[in-house]
Length: 487
Ligand SMILES: Nc1ncnc2c1ncn2[C@@H]1O[C@H](COP(=O)(O)OP(=O)(O)OP(=O)(O)O)[C@@H](O)[C@H]1O
Image 1 (cartoon, protein in one colour):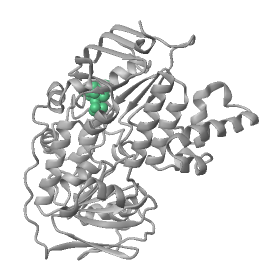
Image 2 (cartoon, protein in one colour; image 1 turned 90 degrees about the vertical axis):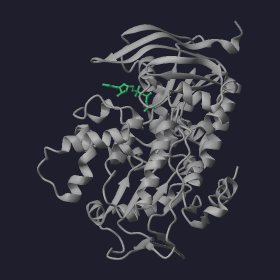
Image 3 (cartoon, helix red, strand yellow; image 1 turned 180 degrees about the vertical axis):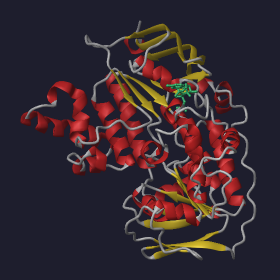
Image 4 (cartoon, protein in one colour; image 1 turned 30 degrees about the vertical axis):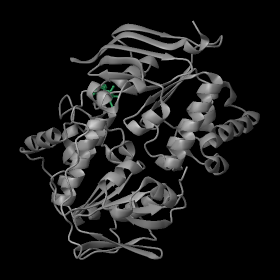
């Protein structure tokens, strides 16, 4: 067998149940050396469960797994999960170096840690490499944490690196750099890479082959990507309607200004029912978002809207004013991990209406919302941790569905969401806007902003607002230029 085709991971007929739910029903998966392998499937198909079994996080019920290395060492697999897994009290350098086990102890080794951290980080973010090595992981933004985790995985010297939705939260420029590094690693060191993503454009840009899992079974096994069209891929994933067009927009009344966002040297009027996209690195959009969701303690941005203060003083006040917010950081700012799905879904209604006692009708109310989003859950009394990543994201959106809101703020709402569900979410966003709600939406996926928004406010990497694009001026290059991310 040619060295570059050596199977590094070989999974045959993998089976796994959680209680009575059979999640994996015969998964085959082969990752070869020198290959970037797209692992595809709808939300809840079983991708993360398989990864957790391969890496020893949970036990299989049945099936064969064999791992090989190209060196004379134990095979090593590094994973970047959808949810960040940094040790909050350790520094960035310590977090990166910790995977190099024996070197994480003495003073000399502390210097070594900084060296390892610097080398790893400068692969994708030279600025972070120069500034963040000694910061505590707890003080990093989600975006910075994501970069640190990826850098850590890249620095392990693993035979296979698995990346689960790594580009959510990365800007276009960072994604470009990451892809270049991955390609270089594969060419120079002949490792295998597994890329789990729902972003078709990126999959095509980066990957050589794909495996598609549907309802816990492999339906396409390591096929070259060029042998499948997008429509075929989506069809194999069991999402026949995924390429439906989003219905045309209702006409917006241009005299009907709902609020004005006032920033340093700019004022952006936003019409009722308008979808305003925020594009660019998080520095700028996160200031606007913090202003709107009531978490900004001081801000260079203020609001001007009838009956509203310049700045909501707390998240509670924001909800009471009729402002909804879907956080991009679902683990620490979104999902209420200790409460069942029903409480998670109904949380904002309860805050808004000051409900203290749980109403009997709430069960039906929750089931309606779960159904409207096709949220795949065993029972609404289960904890959110039993949901797949994409379904946890739907849970956060369900929270605001059907509520009468003046404004809703979305932060990467399609993060980890499969292609079919993305279209459902786009439609929901459109419907909210058509009902007169202002939608403010930050996404790092410029393509979706260009498809759905009426206007896009672009920020450069330093957080300065650089321009407001009207829909007639929309194109990818203009947006890349304004956000300072032209390739
Ligand atoms: N501990 C658990 N208990 C019960 N069910 C679980 C548990 N972990 C996962 N599941 C279920 O297993 C199914 C597969 O989940 P998994 O996370 O593997 O999907 P996925 O393909 O990675 O989806 P996504 O694209 O949304 O991340 C889901 O329906 C999920 O609800």
